[in-house]
Image (cartoon, rainbow, N blue to C red; front, side, top):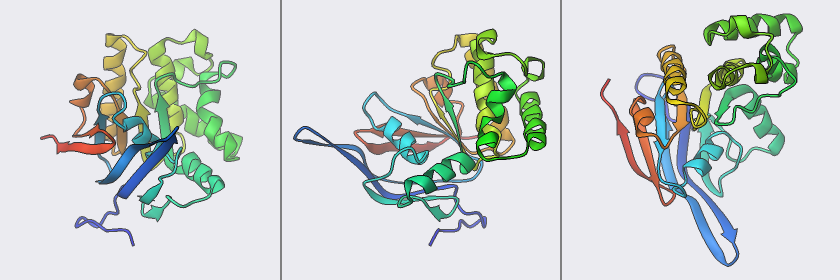
Length: 237
């Protein structure tokens, strides 16, 4: 059973004794080692740690891109750790939004078409796709760039399109993996202000970053080391 918090809300994320091990040659690598954590609805969390600390594996597990070797993962109260590949794909398509460092936009599609892509996969009607993509373009400040293709957009604009695409199906969880890693300092500030806005509007955000300035913007920091949670700190508002 999923634990309900005193405020009556079920946590968006519940990790209980999560392990992810890999065999490399004759070595057993504990990429994630007995991690237990809970993420409340509306939290903005930064996951930090050195290269090889386990933060990328943790993110893959959170996003249902990988499955744990042992332990239980509940997403919005539903156990997903033992689901089939098809069921996991459905969870990814409907409950989780992804933002990557490299944007992952399709070059031949316009900004609007890239944003609508998850809805097209879900066979949402063209009318609803157009309405929702227009709303997302307004949210990220790109209504005047809807018909531009990625090569016609700046790096910051491309990342805004990627964020809009991640939000188009109203996910329970927004995962961002080094979302400003390919951006200059000025554009980084703009993108982080957008994440701050999304957080203020109630979105649940988990962001992997190596940048302490970006980590300081989150309300909670989880620091990984050797596959374990070394530190889990909530910051004063």
